[in-house]
Amino acid sequence: MRDSYTILCPQMSPIHFYLAGSVMRNHGIKLEVLPKVNKSDIEEGLRYVNNDACYPTIVVVGQLINALKSGKYNINKIAMIISQTGGGCRATNYAGFLRKA
Image (tube, rainbow, N blue to C red; front, top):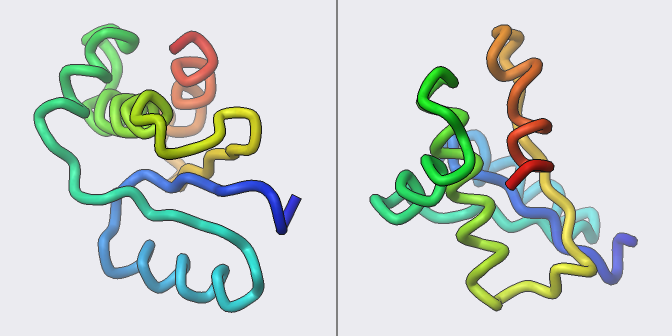
């Protein structure tokens, strides 16, 4: 998978995620940290995430779905990575919302 898959990473911590991306790329892993969040990402997230979820969930789901819809990636050769800080929302909702979306 290292040679054929791209890992998409939502933008949640610009400095740290770009550093992690550089390290992974140096090891032959194609990790792409998505660019800055925009209004379109938030609107896309609201299509799939109810407003009871935390705002970061809406942003992350919207950003990842927009990336998949962009046509830039082969959706049969894509993986996604998200960070987890230990909070209840992040620990339980992201994966479910992404599957639903």
